[in-house]
Image 1 (cartoon, rainbow, N blue to C red):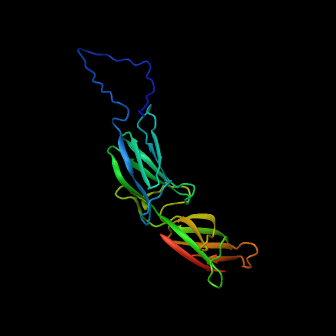
Image 2 (tube, rainbow, N blue to C red):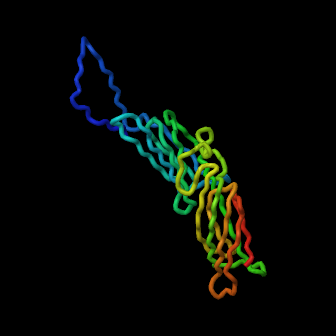
Image 3 (spheres, one colour):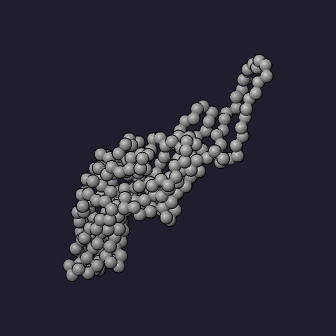
Length: 239
């Protein structure tokens, strides 16, 4: 994990009189600092399966970049032991979450940053489908289509960096004032509910395509959803 230097060729120098060149050797990891904490959603619940990646910024010619990566555990926790330098931080979503990737342009790791809360603005949208007699519709295929014109401005790392400050982002999530869109599919459970993870949105649009099981006698339909959402959001549908 130590920087690698390119060999220097044809180096000439002169020494006059007694000269002492002090060299200190360190064991691997002895100089490392720690970046650790918990990944949470906007409701404060832990988020497992989120990837935290640190890439060291240029330290001069001949010095390789350092790459560190970890995935948050079942309790949302993460921890990385890294060399003390400046890094670009990337936080990206897991396969079962809404696709997103946030980038912090510079994270100073000259000293440890422990107990850092990484807050991801995720919202759980629940679509509950009932028939006209208020009975849950089980096994219906629900397709969601959401688009957002403005992601809420929040602090992803309090005191370190804020989503609204960033101009370098990609994936399905963008800075405050930009947009994202996504399409997901789920099947209603025994309570008639289909759930979708999406990023919170201050201004946008959503729509749901309800396809009941064949032979149920219920009609397929399109239902408009909310224009803004955060945290836990319930969308009732009567088929």
